[in-house]
Image (cartoon, rainbow, N blue to C red):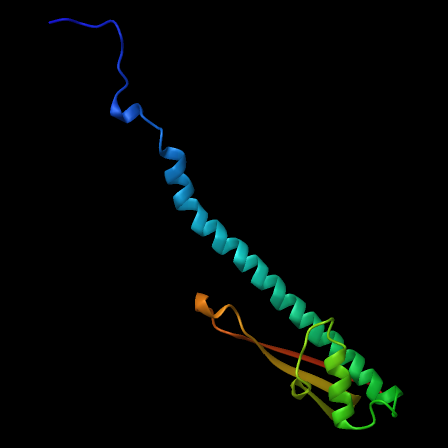
Length: 130
């Protein structure tokens, strides 16, 4: 038997494809994590936009009777005050309550439909004294 002085690497020492396998396992999880962060940010932005729109519309209903003298005027004004988001005016409602003019918003945030995540219902309310 001839013994070679060279040591041949065994199969268990081979690691040529380890990085590709690790990447294939981690990448889908990372992509879902990034999309989740983006969607969560969009939900927060939408919620803050609704809150800002209701606050401005409640103030307008009390202070500016020319622009916001009617319920439809308040709804149209609120739809324009949503930080660049386009909400239908039917999302907003004006009611007279004990605190003054109260504007409420009720909106359903739709996630990316292919992910199968259920929609989120967002509410905002603001009142401005008369």
